[in-house]
Image (cartoon, rainbow, N blue to C red; front, side, top):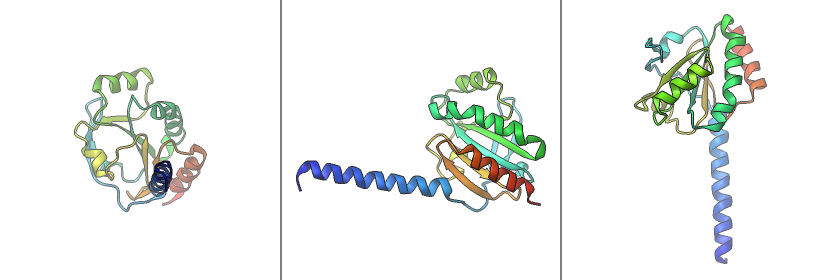
Length: 169
């Protein structure tokens, strides 16, 4: 093989590997959601265990992530659509996101759900070493991870799944 072919073969192999990883990540379920403690921007302390009984979307994001910023209006609309029926959203800002940026973003956009800053990276680590943003994890009422989304979810499909999970007893 000529050197250019090695490069092309390497790129194809890398693309296949990344594609397989993202396909697994976006559909893989992972048992019980971890019980992690966090503090919201308003100072309220809570744990993911306290969200049991609700369908919850945990959204890992950053103000520097253009896809995160783009999807946030749909995350907000989903929250507003289902919150009265037992749905909640927890937005977790990544450890590298400057806290002042997170506070400004949450205030100027009037985010209608809890926002936590993962200062130490412990929340992202607990949810499976989350590094790519946006990553969202959908949890059912029993605290089980139902779906993991890497990248912006298909919100029509997400809404269908949320409807199904809200109907469960």
